[in-house]
Image (cartoon, rainbow, N blue to C red; front, side, top):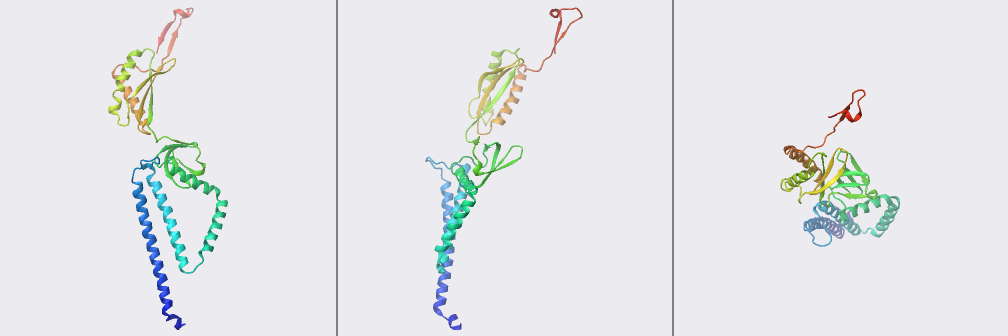
Length: 288
């Protein structure tokens, strides 16, 4: 026993193996750091090719690649370290393959969710902060993972979808929105005058509304009912700004028309007063 403890060759072999393990660990750590920096630098460049990496999915996709690279490099380092100790890694790799195959058969939904989640991120179908409609849920995307997606409705509910169940997606944040305002006027109003006033108002929309990116338009008469004539106005806005713009336009239109004496429709009641024995044609009509 003492002779083995004093065996110089054994200690040299142990020291050499320990040094290799340390060097491999340090090398793997440095390699991971370098690759992460390269990934971050790569995503900071705006690509001009057909594949666009937008700021909306920059952080999600870069973090995903960093994690994948970390797992792969550490796995290769561990396999190399095990080979230094004369451990048969072929059996471990084969066993991992069998276990992976069994897990794959037993967790098909999980695999489907992960694959679908990757393509959601890679194809930029939607990103964190987008306003979307997924299946029957509508709201703002709070989180995108490889397995699930979380959407928060404007009333506060959180919808959690397995990515494999994300089938119908409507993304409202990719392109500009359209603010639609329906203005009701009474039948007694001068329609030509009202249209001129509306055009005058629309000329002030784009300069005063920073969310509006093109001149607002008057489409014309949208509908006529027994009590009102409905005029439709539209304005192109930045993505998801149309709700606020439409509300402001309605308020400003009300003040604009009030200042110019244009009456907006309101419910009216017609009362016919008839004395006993009086014909309907001679009855007094009172409007309220």
